[in-house]
Image (cartoon, rainbow, N blue to C red):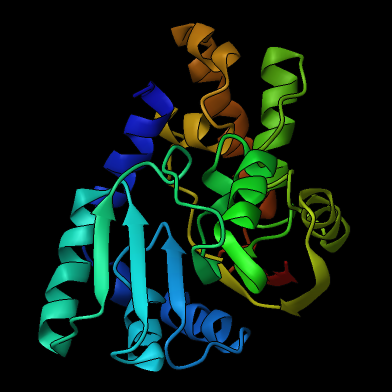
Length: 269
């Protein structure tokens, strides 16, 4: 397990209040994603990076006792929350597996639908994952995921600071799927058809003036790019200086505006 993967696990293990964080849209977006796919009684569902089961649990209720849901996540903290909810709902048709979603394998044509809510941008090889999901699906099955645009979560701030401090352009976490065209192209390259993309605009103000840009934040934002491991203490301090300057420029009386828009992306095998 590399350091990037470890930090992703640590980040999500620490979010024990994931479902009810202030201002969270996760439950709403999970419901919207589930409604985006016409799943039926008896369907077999894979929920990738299931987290606390926000998609997997209502999916299990929809497919009924004739169907089955597998939820995968590599965060034991998240899965613990999901298991408590499964137990409370008395569901017998759901299995939760602790595993790295990028390395796990299933047989060809195993599922009627594959979901990934919030997490696909974290994957180190998104095209390879989409190709695997294509194989996992039955003919006519659906893949559906959410992702932010490249303008979300201060992505431009991180990219600009990285370019100034390191004098090099690194691919930011949001760039691979950052536009509807990129999402469509990646699905087409993996073999999917009947691609549909819905955009749900949203945003929020946050007070960030006193925040610091942590090494973990930098590492996660650039997927543990090897160049970041070579940062000196002086360069990390320079990141902090640049970050504070950027935040000061963006700060209003209400705080800093963050774009939290989401793409809802669906394709069919």
